Image (cartoon, one colour):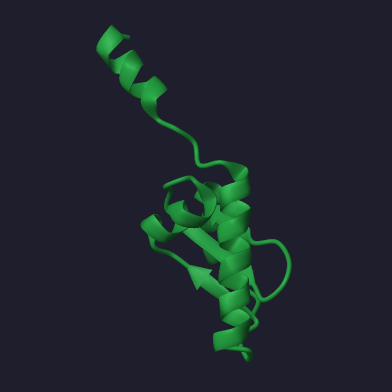
Length: 88
């Protein structure tokens, strides 16, 4: 690996976990206030997935009204769609 590439990789900063949790709590609060009938939100956009998880992958982020979010990606995502385990 070249020094230039190594420096670029080291410059990439992870989003702090405290920030990600704050974003998720705020979203859930807004979702409950704006759309109290919603049970969960489904996020597919990479930029929005990054905003909430700190990773930019193809996948689906499921944010429930209350509780922990679930991120489906890769083989788990393929299994979900192939076997129709998608429960609403």
